[in-house]
Length: 162
Length: 257
Image (tube, rainbow over the protein chains, first blue to last red):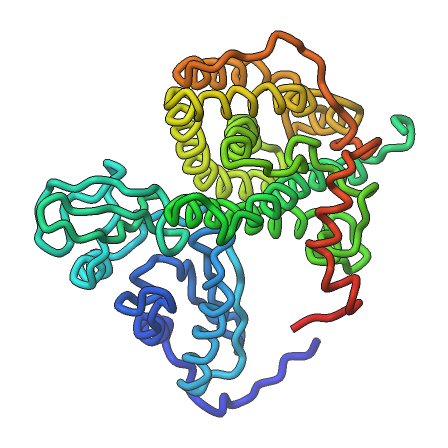
């Protein structure tokens, strides 16, 4: 293949700029946190004139995965990018350790207890009581469990630690 | 068969066994959706089914890739008939009652978690990656199914009776998970997967501990129904299951969205 020098029609946005754009794309199920907060964007790089974004699924059967890919593509197109390739990257497997501090704080503010290494919520996201009990290991989405506060008696979602 | 089985053919069979187990059990468990005894259990069952179907996409996706022919995971799931399925018989038996469903889940989860633990060090990186992903989900499945088996086994006289009956019914389906053939021999030789028989001691230790806590007695007979994982003979139940699962493709061939 011969080398052809072409003047790019628009300047390529920097990788940092793209991370910033992706940080504005909300998770479809928990819209208070972004896809970057969730830790599922595993890489952003230019390969020639194509932007390659590596995405990892949270749970292998999570129905939001297809919507997430669509949202990423839509957001990047809205910023004027047209050559985009999304790659699914399953290894290393997603872990809640990749969730950002900003994301964890926003989750709690929204009423979802953030993941804890101890395997259960640290406190009730509503009244902050530590007197909490598990109702069910599974909750409204694959990534959450169902807990209840024994003091304010409110049920709440706990983002499972995996 | 042994003389003509290439490594890719054996790998394809192995991947079908993994993916068909999760597909058929995922479908069975999904049959509870909207019917479980309490809302929390309904959600838990649906979540478990969802994880299993997600894992199926990875296993059958890789199987289709190994097979070539431009096939997809969907082709394998929806366009094969009974005789081409390679799941163990345990996962195709009907749900019956909630107790039997959870006992079946526990027996499968126990085997599954041990199997995936070994596959995480597979010489095939693709298999190791799927196993690492799936094992996180399966750890949750096992915790829940073991807790529920103990809760119901060591519960009321009535719940204990249901769980003992479930164990008595399902125990003859356990042995098949640990039977080996030339496909397994090829996987062991290539460092891809462990010999199923080698997982039995860990399984017996885990299951023995939980069932003792559940005050349930493991049947003495070691008789095992077999034929699912080799495809030699499935139970009559698989055909009925497929008529539901594959209904759309049978009624409207090639339909997609």
